[in-house]
Length: 225
Image (cartoon, rainbow, N blue to C red):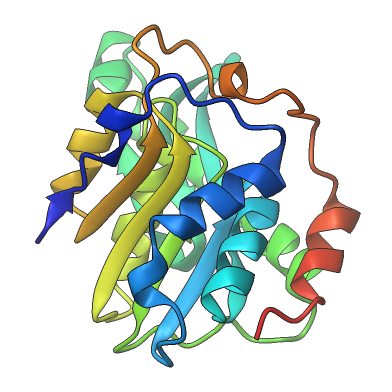
């Protein structure tokens, strides 16, 4: 594994106008993959899809959607005890589960609920079209940023189960610590900027408006190749 790219250390103060600007910046760092016929870009819904579209368009690669659902603590949904990804990948924060004394039954109930919602959203975004085949391909996982890294870690592990040749994590922003952790499981991690006082993904965007389901569907229907 080639691991952490180190690109962010040269761009700690970068600000993006919007997700298009961020996608174009990410694509510049992935130029080596441009035009290769075994590359596929997966945009994490919802915010990663517009960034991923511009990456895929620049690389002349197909784009598909990839979903990750937070596993919220019972009675406190905003606190994540893990994440669930398309294809069945699950990451559990054992520390949170133990500290809050969450039972196996409670955990499974949340996993079942979020699995159902994940499948519903996949149908809503993709319709009857099957997921793109990733076996033997270079998979570039794109999001609009990384916070804790739990969602992207779930995505990496889920994609691994599909037998890709290489898994690349590519984001415009994230804390350097999370990027280093992801580099232990991905073959390559590209992060354009890692602000020294990282607080949230939105801090490096001038326009960080919420992405709608309709926008996701429209982008997925717009060719990138």
